[in-house]
Image (cartoon, rainbow, N blue to C red; front, side, top):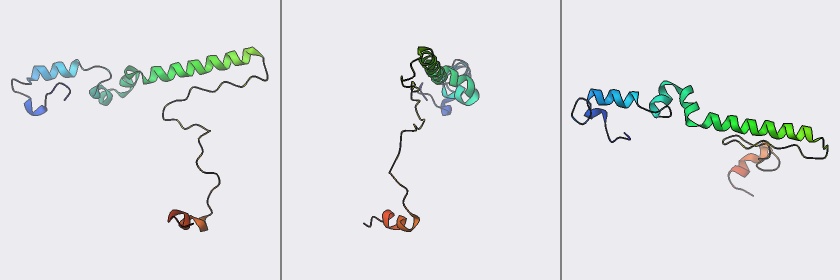
Length: 110
């Protein structure tokens, strides 16, 4: 699709069987084909695993430096926020709504 080819063209001058072979074998490790065939390899190749490992290394280094500093009043370093992970500081609302009041709240009654 990215090359402007379709499987309907297979076997024609636009896309020969040899061309399909080359496209499949030359597809990169982060391509959609490799994500389907070898998802573990594709995850490493996409850089997501590398970025996560780097964030863990930075967190560990910050924690180690904090421990060696010996200052008891220094705040403990916070980990680098990861995409898609909920933080403990994210809170919605204040108190739970009692079950008997839920219908009124849901319908917008005051």
